[in-house]
Image 1 (cartoon, rainbow, N blue to C red):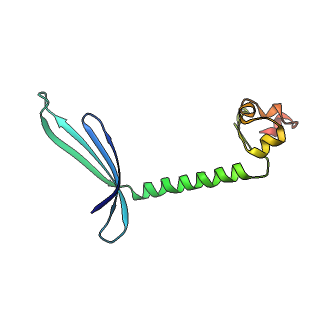
Image 2: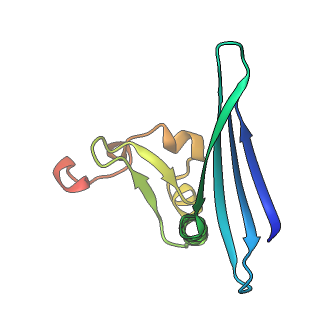
Image 3: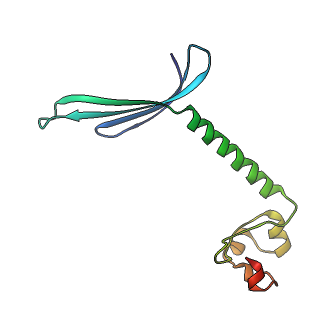
Length: 128
């Protein structure tokens, strides 16, 4: 087993490792090992419980989510269409792309303090 990447988190009586290893079949897998150290009243180590998990599927899902977030961010930022992201309940403007900022003439901070009703001429019923 070869370790290629590792992250660790240590508390007083717990230890957690997340690492990538090369399996003997040549494929890479992610593992997560969690250890709990138990002590008696005199603070002598009594035993340790260790749980080992294959988290390859979770890591792959996390990677896919990050890739999709990046695709959305690029689509949002570089789109020549005006795009506003709104809170569906309140109409508060949460974000706006560069095309929207240019069209409405506000900077990002200004537009994020606004409600869609401040820049839209549609009736409230049709807005959101």
